[in-house]
Amino acid sequence: MPFTAAQAQPGGQGFDTYLETVAARARREGVSSTTISRVLTGLTPNTRVIELDSGQPSRSSAPPPAAPYIARHVDAARIARGRERYARDARLLPGIEQRYGVPGSVLMAIWGHETNYGSYLGDFDLARSLATLAWEGRRRGLFEGELIGLLKMVDEGVPAYRLKGSWAGAFGNPQFLPSVYLRLAVDGDGDGTADIWNSDADTLASIANYFRDAGWRPGQPWGVRATVPAGFSMGNFDTKLAAPSCDRVHARHGRWLTVAEWRQRGVVPSSPIGQDVLASLFQPDGPGTPAYLLTGNYRVILQYNCSNYYALSVGLLADEIAR
Image (cartoon, rainbow, N blue to C red):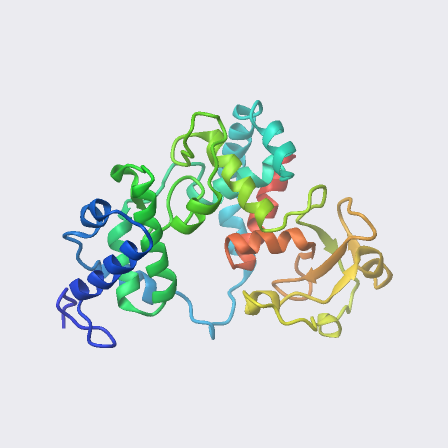
């Protein structure tokens, strides 16, 4: 049966009726009636957005091999373009690094992963996508809040033509959600706006601000490649901690030991890292495959995107850009 705007979702609420509840909440939170009318009037559900959301991997899915993902996302073209961008923004990066404590190579790697350095920002109508996801109800708490955030962005002066992005509501060079934009986007070039669509300075400073807010530790790497001795059993070093979020991702990491303690167990870092740095061992594809000692800064990358393969690829791409 085709999906239509009249179709009722759990609770028996049609799309237009649901938008009335969103409008009422937006008014309570101070959004102007003009903005509410301009953004919400005429919206219809987007069936493609629901299809894409329904196709996301389930929590019960076994993780695929990491190596193919890394090969696709840390490829020669992305590395080369990242180095070109890094050189182009060489004037901007030292100030941003000094202010926020995050290496420019990591900022570039995020940009490269999210939009291939701005080459594709997404063309989904953000209001329609967020309204569809909120109405559909699987993650209503998240997406209704983001839809309200989008309305607040418009109230703050973000022009309507910029309200395009991914099917899941992210936008701009760093693919921020509205709530993140409102809280952490910054004006990096001093022109009075946080333009994460066109300004390199605003884009890089905003990513850096996100990382600082998430707890990035200056002077510490995200992690390093490591070698493990023959016959090493990861099962002897399973984590004893339960992560408050992203639990299945963190459950694949080993327990936290200092680098010196890992060395005592035969695990040798392949790059410089302080002996007293706490690190967790991760070997995503099992014995005989690449292993990594991950620091607390790796967990910061995971807050940007809760995926081990994403975070590993960001770290490895950053290393290549800086090389």
